[in-house]
Image (cartoon, rainbow, N blue to C red; front, side):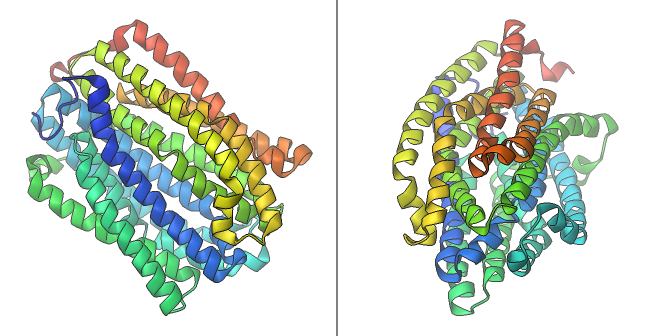
Length: 451
């Protein structure tokens, strides 16, 4: 079964690059409209509005990370079945992704809206930011099912080797989001609520149209009622693969919440500085995430095909590319940090610019550790082992809590800025160790069609 791109033959480097490029362009577009959101809010509504949006990002991050982790985790099995040429199991796997994803999305939406005020208490939201922060986050969580739909369908498309279709619909969402930002914020003066509505509407439209196109384009998406029959063992296998990644992402998100709570306790200027830096940082690591995303599918398909040598070659090439990029981009960020942050808040916000310089310098010096983490975590996930990345997520949580509770108390914002680098190093170490352990055992490869 070869619905789109067969990653089990040909040059590993070439296949990863070809598969990665649409993912990279998509990530860039995603970050561009996220940047547009932030810049429009910061420059038209003011630094406090920017801080209000940024002060609650960790809540959305926890919920979205859990669900996106679940989607990407369960689709690992889809990729493996495709690599093994088992169309029947692959179609049932697609159905299982929809069942698990939509059910959990509904639960997260309900819990998120009901307990939002309690989460705000945990985050120590400053009084002057509370109202805008609550409005923005409530709208985003209420529309979460629509936001998730695109990510779920795009994960499935990448599982079958198609990284171009998600890009097309992401571009549509990006353009629509920016247009709605201008319309709702500048024309209808809806404030931060306009930014939230723009995100929910654009993502929902993109997700629905992407799903409809996928059904028309690929036979594997044309599911029948028997495909949705829940078999206990099949469901267990998908949850066993996907849940650890969800937990891993959620643990990381909880660590971000500790970080956000400590940050919110410093000053609105610190919140604004971090919000701007996090947007720039997300844009910077997009190529690294794209390579890692491609490597997961590449590894999963070759694992299903029983080709361990191709897995090793793919990991090697990915690591070289990510390491070089991290060094170059880190240097560029250190030099251009003040200018980039001034795009969000203006050149007159001297305290915000000073704090942003501190944060960005520390993180840029450790981008190499992010490269190591992304590559080896992707490889471990691709062979279907998700518990190790989950343990890595727990180590990330420990490091972020340490930075938030202990280091920041001694060194203030500078100490807090070490949270992400500490998390990268700790989580990267365990994934590297496990990868080489499994590599010596040929990754425990077995033919999935014989299971």
